[in-house]
Image (cartoon, rainbow, N blue to C red; front, top):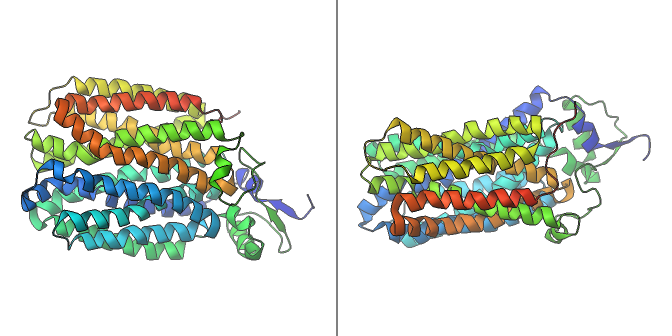
Length: 445
């Protein structure tokens, strides 16, 4: 390597975590808050739609499923798009892609158009996640990377908490249409802010010679002293031998195959468990006689627990690595779900029941969000968005099935069967994560 050639990954890995970099993580996190909010609006309004349209709960099963199906496609395409045209543009385009159809849902009067718009919104919702994770991982030094990625992705349940809280306050006085108007207008404003605020990933810029002047300016803003005539490479990552441009085939090369399969299995079953909750907690509690406010508060607690759990998980990863942290949280999630399966589900909402929704939601969401940091660690920059996007896209199959699994469990065995799906799914997640070889290691002193 020539004397004036800069390895961008190495420079970032060993550099400081500046205030500007923290601001950028905040920007990506805000995009994910909106993703999580818009994704969970429908689950909050199903009881209202059932009353207004005189339809049973089962009529909404397919509508609930088409959004995740769109997210599955959007996750794979959005990841590959990010590796080709840049994570920044792909992320902003994804935000717009879920904002406009969400706003349009406020005008629908039937299941067919609702399903179409949820599918289109799902494309954008799915495409946002891999690019947000890739950007967050490539803005910061190696030591802070798990925390930064998790802090970004943890905003999924934070957005879900926001959706539940908004629903509890908007639905009684203004109706479900006003909720979707709010869910469309707010992200439009934020997309304009992100367009102005976010730069492109430094490691992506290093692979595009014509954009090196932009990279030089960005690295200087990060506090690195680089010359105007510097050349750049983007090495680093766990698999330096890979030199593709967003090819999904590379994810199943011998070096990455086992980790890819383990991650896909973990994402599949973890998203299945979480979206069984996101999709049906409100409807389940409403059917059991709980008022709308209590049902929405339970979903908010499920999400809010995920925020605290994910942050705690990220801090643990920085201390002991991802293998111990993720396997431990998965095992605890199984135990917590089994406890809930044995609890009576009847009004009024007790502090113990609300606490269990918080704890179980915390563990499920903590595993899910920290897995993004693991995936970003496993894949090198050339296929990072593609790798994360593929794992999440496979996970979205579980997301799609969650609509049917939750409904079947409730019809077959009520709340006990519903909570048991969480326990069974998280047991498989634990096994899948054990398969992954390239976990984030415990930091050396």
